[in-house]
Length: 289
Image 1 (spheres, rainbow, N blue to C red):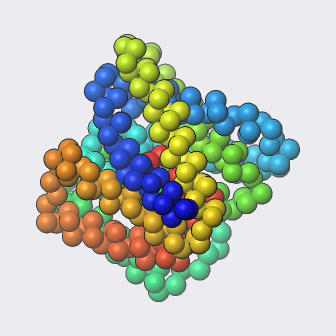
Image 2 (cartoon, rainbow, N blue to C red):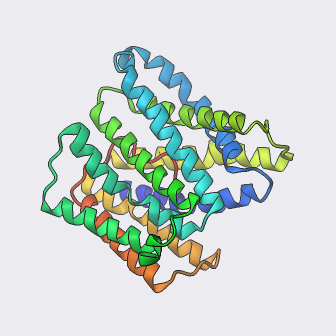
């Protein structure tokens, strides 16, 4: 049962681009969508977060880190996925294991052995190919590419913060990420100085449904499953997210990968598998994608 539930959740995350692109076609941009969807999801988690205040009030910095890192990861990933190519964004986001290895070593004192060095090298080589190979040296990556990489980095650092504070309850960690996503999205809209864009009823209803149904269901399914199975097995199954995204983007959206991008994707997938087979899945395993 946990395996089936986790596979279901991974496929949902892989198909996240579909509701995002659909809602965007209704006139809802990435920042506003994040504000509405994660704001709605926050309302479901905040009561538990407030109830658990005595258990996490001694870790304000860790919760603040999850607020910023998790919030930025969700916002950046949403914007990048809406604006960019689905497959390209997903592959660049999946450099997260690289950042997780480096963050774990830098902040948690985790040992980097030869297998982890190999995984980092494979992932970086894959990213180099995805970004254009030697052509990358002639022109800098696009803003959307950087946003996809940054979202993966923030997500990995958020997971490092989660691993470092096992005393903080899961609902609080999710609440910090959800609230952070909506607050940072509101801040981005404010910085743009454009106010809340004019959106029709269909856009608002779809955004609310995405937050209250898609995000909440996928997050709860993932969380329940990873707490009922071996960490290594769960990490491998979660890679189905990337496969689901690539296949669905090719079959539904008609995206085509060049041979160089395919090679890069294979290297990134190999690096992710290498790390997943040894990494302990954090108790907040997903909230974006």
